Length: 248
Image 1: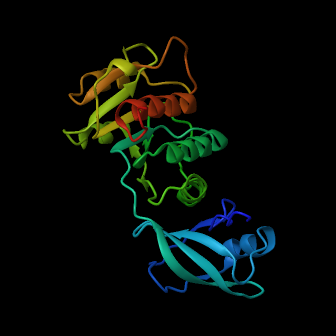
Image 2: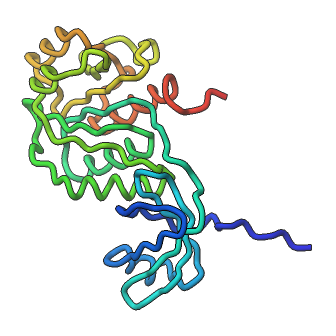
């Protein structure tokens, strides 16, 4: 006899909704999300959709009614509880648009808990469009299966960041001038990674960082990496050592 198809199918769309979810909830989807689901994914009454709300986890819902510009959903059951990601922050100097979007997307996929823009002396992009970065975070979470959005902090200048730094959190400073290999640094969470702008940190900033009690200078291999490459490489190494990536 034929096998019973998996439910929900692997192709089921996944959507973040900023409303509380629970058994028998009936969220209404409109705007751009509804346009995508109706006209691109071609959802109709009875079709499944996975929802998450950043509070209670992930839920399976079905389309109860598909109108011209809105969908009314009916939540059926919970599929995942809210996740607990490793306690790792990424502190990064904003870079040009496409590369910044890439940092946000990949850091979110890798499981970062907090994204902290840092304004340095050589930062070219000082004004961060928060709405666009939030959209990147949501899209990445929808794609990779996260149930909790990383926190997006307001930009802060480097001296203020260091002044207010929590004493219990190690700060892994990716220094292109050299440092201890990150693979050899024992810095489990709570921890943070700091990467610089396109032009790197100034000598004054480097001296300020090295003098800070929470800072560990780290090296990311023998080559000089772009700012966005350094950020993602450091997250990957840390997650393999201290994060939620299985060792086997």
